[in-house]
Length: 172
Image (tube, rainbow, N blue to C red):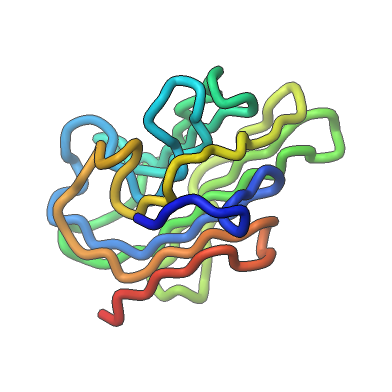
């Protein structure tokens, strides 16, 4: 993890991408890939992970307290334990139709991205709270939701295909 800073605050359109290889994709509960969620009930930002049904999940708060989600992809990942896969979440906080749009993607080659299930459209526009919590890779809220496997890289972008705010590359 890395301490919070102004340069890590993404409060509008959002994109996070992570390449992982879980030892077991059907671990109990939620496991977290990348987050900026804080530890208190008034400092919630966002968290991206996988549930035990192999669906990608995303949740966030617009005000630091009330949660939106967790919202799961409408389709599960097609994965094999130990085999790398890249996953992505995008959130368009104002889709131009009075709501938000949330999409999940996967890629086996880091070049060709396939949308995972249907676009999820909310009835109102939203925002992401500027949590004071650290940016965490592989967990949330100070260490919750660990998993076993390999983490290859992670990026956080402000905007969909926008400016890279943080990037981690394990060099694997």
